[in-house]
Image 1 (cartoon, rainbow, N blue to C red):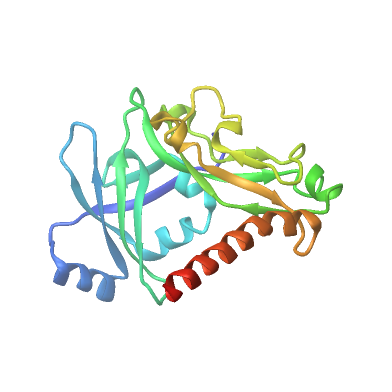
Image 2 (cartoon, helix red, strand yellow):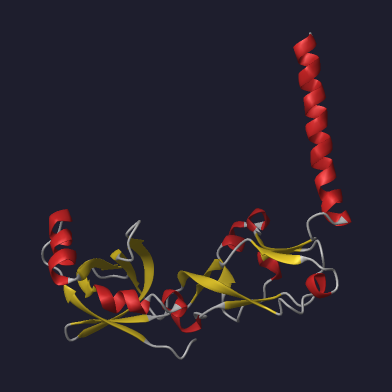
Length: 224
């Protein structure tokens, strides 16, 4: 758990619908939000836009337990969805999932890659690191929720791919994807050879050969 603490002051929203949401944003500089989950009914909320906008500038906000102050009541939740304006730096809507300390939750947690400059495939092999994921979804109790997951690249050699199963997760934390089986063991990062190197040419050669063969077949079909 991070030492960061996130709190947002909220109000119960009585007016609903697109028109009410537009007025909320335009006149009050607030955004509509919803809190759902657990045994209680969903609750429509409004939050000051600037408060949540500045909170989202901290990466930890998305993988942290958030306290929602709703009048005199406090609710613990995690952010599940955030709708942003497609062209302007505005948040339009937020979804929060109410948490139960005794029930596991699924949350997307950012990946932090360490020892990139010391990576064997980079320092000795002259390769570069190509990242294919920047976050993973984990399942754990709220008290076990990590702020981020480290991916150690130190011993990764040239031409090697790091998969989800290669990541060491904290105790009590599991990968949601891996729970679906080996076919979901996604690539996280690769150490690839420099462009134009022998390894790079070797990797590209089979594809080029396949393309040539395909072209020959097409030519044969055209002659017949």
